[in-house]
Length: 176
Length: 176
DNA sequence: TGAATTATTGAACGATTTGTCAAGAACAGG
DNA sequence: CCTGTTCTTGACAAATCGTTCAATAATTCA
Image (cartoon, rainbow over all chains, first blue to last red):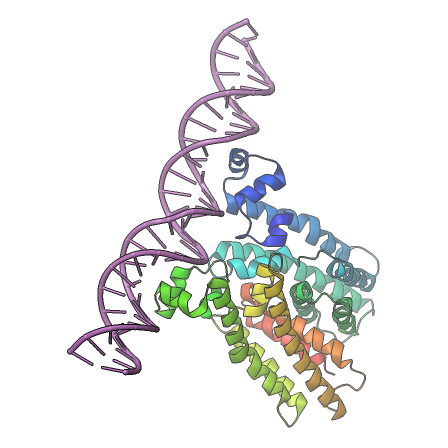
């Protein structure tokens, strides 16, 4: 998973995958079919291990606003980490967007699930009076998604921690 | 330029470049050196033709707030266009981020120039009382950059015009 | 016009790509 | 212990990658 995450789909060769997994070639192809199918599994794995915990955190009972704040803090610690490779889903969008509609749809669905979780948390925070009452939950959820994806892209080249903090600060301001 | 923009660096072969430019192979290599050098030229060209006009628009005299609004409208029309391929710079970040620091620095500089233009416009709008007086120009500029890059990524798979409009609406709200 | 330089063309290069084949190792059940 | 199945290993095949070579065409300049 980390190979695809770090280097992207095309730049990762099957020989790299062999070294990373320890499996031989025939085992890889026997188990997954081909490279593309393996990548699909990796996307699912990435969603389960990275995005889904965030979604569950947003849906966790208690203060939705506090949940959102925790997600923002998660953005900070990951994007400031010395080895940050953005979001596997977002990284893959440009790579498949022009030539693989099915893959694009898979990626799109993952982003939609994240957007939905943001929207639910915002709606819940709104009802609890934890965020601005005039806030458009749907539009804000979409913007938080875009902000996160943009942060994932820009923070890969701009390594200043202050950059990440500026963006996260704005994310917080969006709720008030 | 459009080939790299649409398909990315690795996915674009030199045979594609021949067909796109009409030039023969030796001519391409004689004129640019190699594929990577050609891509560097393409990035410069993209900056001149796409990003720089936006920067100049932000720096244009008159109402800075109006200039910002015009940029937001530009986001809308481009991201909603039937053939939208995101931002060449942002698309390239994941592709080079893990293996080509020099290229990453080039991409980083392009994003910084955009961020700087946002910051100047925001500062100017602040002095003119066209935006919230408590606004942190630097942080907001960084966030507008991230929002734009995120929009460029997500809007490639989520083709609903309402998505783009939601994000742009939030960008406007960030100024108040 | 003639000679020298530049530009273009098609073929070929070596390296690397994904995917497959076939032989051998480990293991299962009877 | 022997046979049949599964798994692993390395080599191989076909295609494509970026790049270069060699020959031809075009152009420039005296």
